[in-house]
Image: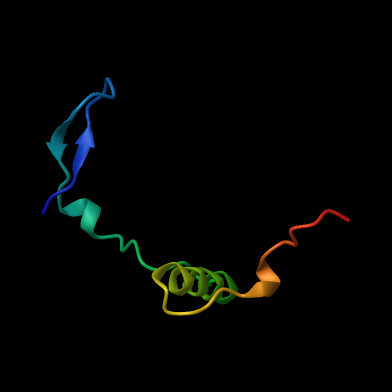
Length: 64
């Protein structure tokens, strides 16, 4: 599947990107953030109902 570049006016794409765009790999970031990934994974598991929520992440219902 080819990606398209927008035209000069910023409208609809008018040109299919050529092989020069494929020379550079998008790849992973140099240093993945393991803590952010773990937190996002935990949140997704809670949303899916696989894990219970962490009561420490929930603010108290009363104001101090």
